[in-house]
Image (tube, rainbow, N blue to C red; front, top):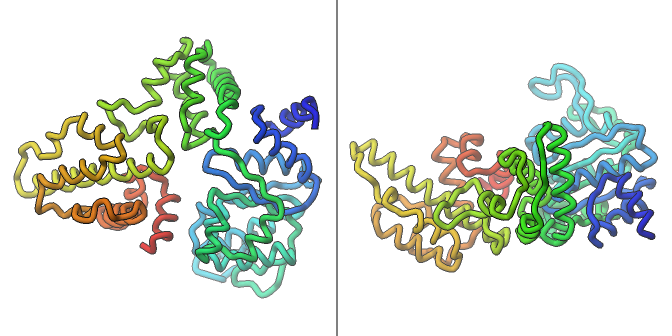
Length: 402
């Protein structure tokens, strides 16, 4: 496909970037859009899976029909079947009238099932029936209904692994992956970052009537070196925040460094990790940092209840000590061991005697379980304390059997 046609398609699809990976995706969309074939979109969170689904629908033969978007991970397991397939009056408590589901509403159009890896197994069976026969049964109903929809599914999970662990049906996986579009994380095509930055910045500045004088070359180079665990979504939010904070100025590398990278002596859980960190390392360090904060809060509460208002051992920890713990990954265990020596009788979240042998999953499970108990199993308070979304918390609860 020649360059001029690629550019025309890019403009039509509203997809930015000049990397080879994005060009291949554009060619694939052009080939499959006008068919009714089922498509599975894979990619990390923030890579633009919904953008691809929009492009496919807008250039399909169903473009004048509805595109219904469903976030499977945001719907509680107990009501997802009712949301997808509808229900009849009296089918359950609160069902005071007949209600259409998403599949009935999307008839003759397209349905986009985002986060399909979160769909319960029992619901997957019914989805497979829709894929194969185009029919479904509303919750509590006895009359089969038919629907003519094109299904586009998306997930940030590796469904092949999920099928091996029996968390996703193999027959549904093979049916969905007829055509698979894999979106690369932003760190795999950093050459596109300047294009994204300029687009995000100009759109935001125009929308909010803010004077924008651009990013310096060194600032753009710095942005290209960062690993962006949140991908284009994170980049967009960061660009917009810089424009607000640096109104009317050329944004240079010093401004970027100040806001983007966690300084060793002023750690903050609200800022991204350093460039050299992998996503797994960053997540692990954030979990361990939350453990320290929870232990500190627990210790302070005990002191207040016992009438001890003197400075706690945790308050004596210097910022440099905390930053020393957060960044040299290979020394995390040593740091925690030094911490626990000051409080022999503490009810530790992690037993210090097993540090170095536990897995990240065990640490994460223990942290989530302790935090749930601390907040009497109130999900919103627990998620806020852990600095994660409620949807992620529900997924972790299900994953760890909590």
